[in-house]
Image (cartoon, rainbow, N blue to C red; front, side):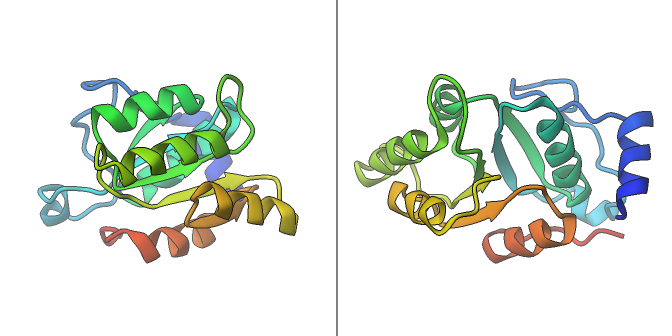
Length: 169
């Protein structure tokens, strides 16, 4: 999807997904998916992002990819969300108030090592692109380091490494 179409879509049809069970988009059919795909369990992605614009763009991209997404606005919310229901994948911003993404990843990995939480991939999603930033993400337990701004095709390619994404028409 080109940027002009995405901006038009976000302007006329904002996508609001709630992190709470039964939120505004719970149970809503996802556009562009075959009927057979809608009946299958869709991949569950937790987006951990504090910036509103980045939230809207990332959630729209995830919806277009046919995944169900929940939102956490910082590491504290992400820990609680993962303890409530483990996702299939976490997209983790690095710089956030309260608890940053690196500390959150370390705590999630500790719970997984202790057997208190199932394993799932954690992908850093940040504007920080220096080699030292990538190394810090990997040391904290991230599986990959993606940089912003988000590109739909690149994000889909990365997510396909970890998830069985439904085909989109």
